[in-house]
Image (cartoon, rainbow, N blue to C red; front, side, top):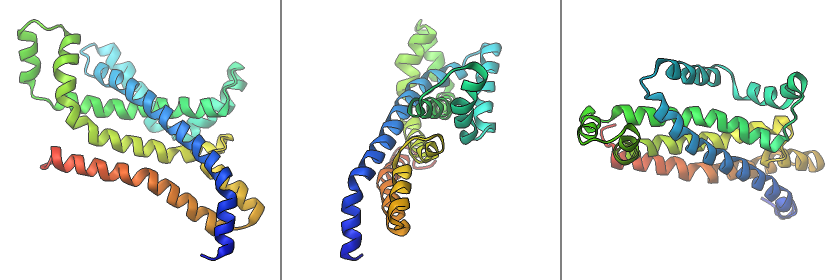
Length: 220
């Protein structure tokens, strides 16, 4: 890397930094909503009510069958046409990624809860705990170790998926990089910087997930 490349990178840092902040904002907001919503969704998915299970399963299949990019276009371009509802691009990105993340986190929670020994649930009921108390004080604490590694993987996927939001006009890291490339023509240098940015964000999370998986579930 020559001195001119370093100079260009230094000059581009403010714009790349603003894009990185947008990416971090979308990712952190989506992760927070997905984690909170996923806990509720996953717990409800273990319900014995057939109608509730059907409704939640339908929601899951919709977000699994339709690509995230299509959902982004539907919420950003479709809602104004069909319902006259305009959502700013940043909020639209957070909304769609959160709705998708809730299904992914929820399935992690559901799988962890259903993998617990039946004896724990029966013991809680035997001492008179309500279903809510059983969930809050027995099942969720016992399932944390099973939820955390795959939950971190969902967070990593959410971070990487923020790159799609450039297509609805969010000036996140990719968009900022494209604007710099259009001005300077230095695509290799800027894309290398973006590669490094996403790697620094995602690799530690992936490594942490693997480490926790090996420590807590060595036979998994």
